[in-house]
Image (cartoon, rainbow over all chains, first blue to last red; front, side):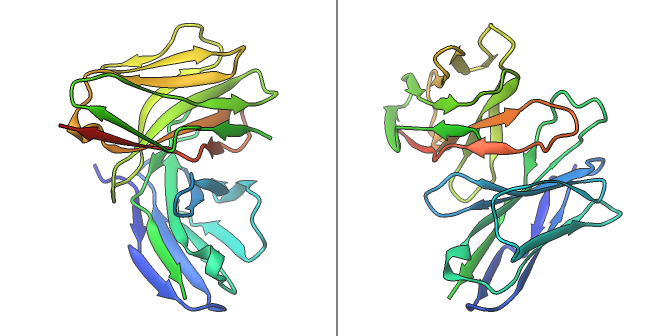
Length: 116
Length: 117
């Protein structure tokens, strides 16, 4: 079975530009979460989407936005890029039943964004 | 807000030996999960082991086991019979338990483990 996929693998942008990152969850998973991992740090939570609705948002500026599509894939958009946005962006999918006790998050390989 | 602290930036262990990675956390929650994730070089993050806070018994997965001390808010990972394939960044992570809330993982800064011959 295919795992979580992300595209593109690598991306180079300049300051002020906009970027869109894409994620396809594992088949059957209805939730997608986004994390930012700056070099030398642990991942930081950006968003979670479940059934196309935003379920949670981390401490990130409004330049960061996301959405989830009817097929549960997701896009992360970042506007007005800053040098500090350079990072590995990770997507994770999970099943998330109604009676959630624990739903393991499965991570994709990430998109490496470099802002020059 | 929750915080997770990993005080060992780097560790090294010889093949077949045992190593323990440390993690402490801070939370006011009573119901939560703790995790150890492994991120090999240029490869994706995978779950190593999980612990539910309400369980007193320490979790074990083959060569990996944890020492969970809830009162001390400590959660260490022991890797027995270390293998070259264990070389990776290891992240300790926290997730609050609850229905209808975000499944948000809070990570520590990681420990880089090098297994040597």
